[in-house]
Length: 126
Ligand code: FES
Image (cartoon, rainbow, N blue to C red; front, side, top):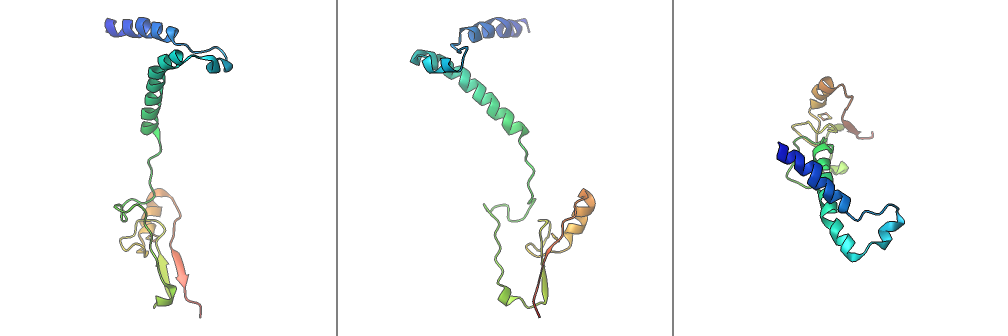
């Protein structure tokens, strides 16, 4: 543990002190090529840590839990002219086992989550 402590407190501190980080914004424009080369490992480490942190905390919630997950985008086309029923309900909760048609699964989803999702009802005009 003492080795790690010394590494962070001494070696890392010395390394950071030697980095050619300018005191002003305009100082970045006067850095030499070798100064930028010295900054590359540091910037790479900061970028890598930032990326890994972002990957851990980014929102991962998806709307679609299971419908056609192998496709890049779920698109369904319905020709209104071919509608035989007077009305058809289309799922908007993405939980229907008959997707894209509504099977009432939104009721259980709403009960579990407190949401108020319902289907899109398409009616024939009379
Ligand atoms: S089952 Fe999804 S809206 Fe009815």
